[in-house]
Length: 245
Image (tube, rainbow, N blue to C red; front, top):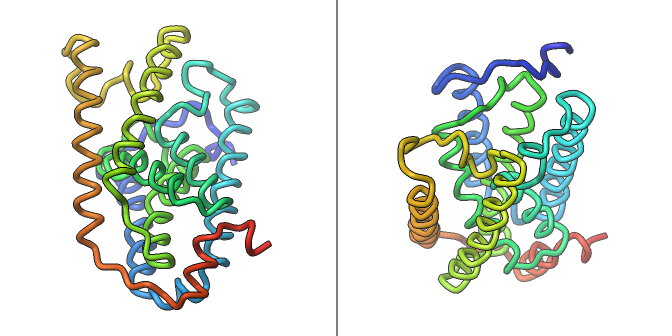
């Protein structure tokens, strides 16, 4: 239990056992969703509840740990990391079923793929923060795929530009909060790349890279075939939990 909560637990190495475990877990879950599409459509409300419960438990565990174990740090503990923002957006989608919310969650969540390939400052998977990382990023990746299978959802260009506008607003907030708290939100303090680049140029590069990432995500997602379920299943999946409770 001490290692599960140790605030000084070391970070995992790139392509070490913990990194490969996280990758394998999400890839296996993704393969199951794609292999059992009919069952996903037939049980969409149950799966929606499951995703929501995992996400809510992860949020409670994450912030309880930040408050009671690691100690609250205004420069790291706020829900301003891109992954934490995305999880909250997708929780809102799971509750409401609103596609406009899902699109923002999808485009913001594309960073989860990059994080899985190149994890930064992540604790082992048998640590609470490592488990939290795995759950939040799994939800971020799997929920849009679930929506595509259960509801025939696809990302749109209009949603891309709306999401990018929200990203620019988020980025402005991050710059201000980082300046006030000496924070590392969006990894602007401990950069994964281009450490020697002057800050303003790095900010512009980050915004440009985000737009490119969104276009890549859009192009790839539009090429993946989806098969709509029966009408009743589509309506239930789209309506959010408020229609099934």
